[in-house]
Image (cartoon, rainbow, N blue to C red; front, side, top):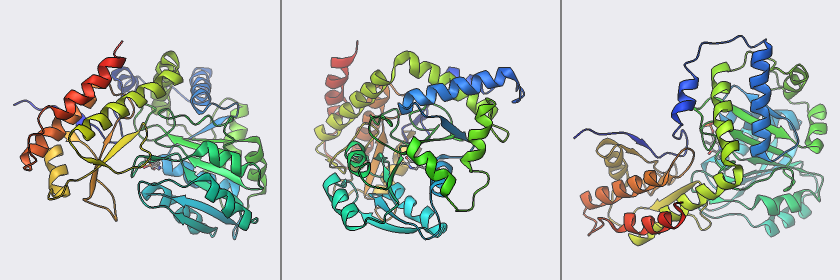
Amino acid sequence: MIKKDILLSPGPTQVPEEVLLEASRPLIHHRTPEFSNIFMDTIDGLKYVFQTGEDVYLLASSGTGAMEAAVVNLLCPGDRVLTINGGKFGARWAKICRAYGVEAQEIEVPWGDVYPKEELEQELKGNPDLKAVFSTLCETATGAVFDIQGYGEVVCRTGAVLVVDGISGIGATACPMDDWNVDVLISGSQKSFMTPPGLAYIAFSSRAQEWIERSTLPRFYFDVRAARKALDSRTSPWTPAISLIRQQKKALDRIRDFTLGRLIEHHRILGEATRAGIRALGLELLAKHPGNILTAVVFPEGIDGFAFIRAMQDKYRAYIAGSQEPYKGRFFRIAHLGYMSGYDILTALSAVEMALSDFGFENPSGKAVAAAEIILKEHWK
Ligand SMILES: *Cc1c(COP(=O)(O)O)cnc(C)c1O
């Protein structure tokens, strides 16, 4: 049989053809009015998706670069901060902080769980010297969505700043930066932004902008003071990733036409359909508060998780993601993120059914697809 690959991972995600083609256009020079217009339009589009009046800075890096930029632009050596760790990505905050001599007090949340804002409030009361709270919007390792709105309410009443990794969440789940009192918001091109990997985004509230001046951590390439200064001349301090920015602009034009509200609703529907399909198979979801980004599914008893994912990828060409350390082989993740349609979800569930049947699971054929179709059809207008 002719086989087609289908990308179902939570980054990189599928990219519209017109965005892919944008990369093949001849390069233009970046110190020109033509590029400046593209650059400023891209920033406008990012501000729309971040729901902020503040500038959004573009970094030529993957998302982690913007995480590092948040740390080095806000803090001083020896500062104490709180990091919320509900999975592999939440864990990264403390690692970056410690690499720079920042004292991270880590809240370890069991995978799939979230951290209630009431507990955060208590923690901040007991530790008035904490300078910042680092959280994740959607923990991509588990699919759990954290209560950023609640954290914003709590943190804005203290002297600390709230920093949110929205790399997978922004564009797929609500997180209006200004309304929710998020001080620093981060994202990247390769998740819901429908663009290949390689660009990271970061915005600072007016409160956080004052911190940028006070920070004494070493920084150069990711010094956002350079980005802010260059922005006055409608440009970036270093050579920008010209083609990627053109691609991101194209994708943002599309997102703006579609509207952010509809994009979030679209992701919600795909998530609901995926969960309905998985439940129809009698399988267990990992996250207690699963969101719009991905569905993590616990392997049923007796299935070898590694072999299952290999079969999904090699035989069915469906690139779902596995689970990461220390839960490797325990669950799999189907992303419903970025440029996907209802058919992509049906294909994903169909591949899961066929692979389950290969692994001796009784009678899976059609069950998940049928349940998902009901949800999708309801919204298919
Ligand atoms: C993908 C992702 C990252 C890491 O981004 P890179 O682009 O691989 O550096 C960080 N946090 C979350 C929540 C993510 O989903």
